Length: 139
Length: 139
Image (tube, rainbow over all chains, first blue to last red; front, side):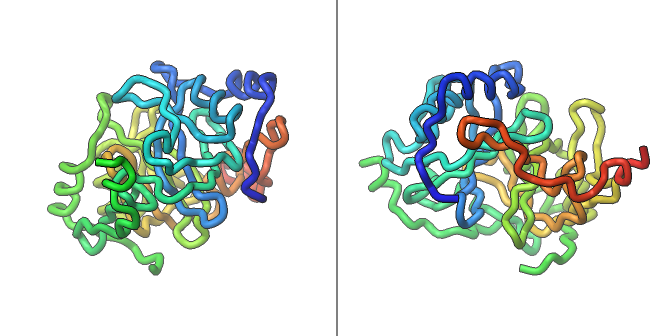
C-alpha cells in the first residue's frame, strides 16, 4: 500500500457518510495510525464535514470540540496528515485512519500523543520530544 | 516488551484515575492495539471501574454502553485481551491499550473490528473471518 493521495468522489463520500454512526453531537471518533509503522499517533473527532473534506482533499481534517470548528491537521504547524486509507469498525461508530504523518502528530513535539505509560506502577513519559513546539507554532 | 501480566497496586490505579479526563458520562475511549504487531483491534469505552478492574486483573474490561454493565472482554467468547501496557494521550482523554489478544477481537470472527475500508471509491471488506462466530458464542 503506497502513501498515495486519496481523492474520493462525492457519491462515494455520501455512501460512506450514510453508513457511519455519528453520535448525538454529530461526531465520530477517529484513530490516526501511521500506515507503514503501525504507530498509533492520536485520537480525535470528526463531523460529517471533516470526513468529506478529508476524503476530498486527501489531507486529514478533524472537528475541534474546544474551538468548535473544522481543523485541518497541521494548518498551523505544517505537520499534515495525508490520508492513505479510511476504515471503520463493525459498529460503524469509530474510524481508523491510516495516514502518512509529516513530522510529529502531537502538539508537544512528540511523534505520538500517547506518550504517557503506566509502567511498574508509575506514570512514565515514553516518547521524546523530537521537534521543539516553539518551532511548530512560532511562539 | 514481554506480554507479562500487569497487576497494578491500588494507589497507582488511584493516581492514574485522578489524571484521566472521563467525559460527562464518566467514560473514556480506549483503543486496543496488539502489542507486537501494531494491529489496531478495536475501539471501546471504559469507566473508572473498568480501568481499575483491567489493571487489577491484567485482563481488559470495558463498559458496555448497550448493556450498561462492565464487560470483561472474552467473557463469553474466550477471546480475552491480556493487558501489556496502558498509555494515555496528551489531553488525558483517550487510552491506548497495548494488549495480547487471544484469537480474534471482533464478534464477527475477524481479528480486528476495523475490517471495512474505502478503496478506490468502494467499501471493501479487507479482513477475513478466521473463527466462525457460532463457535465463539455457541449459537
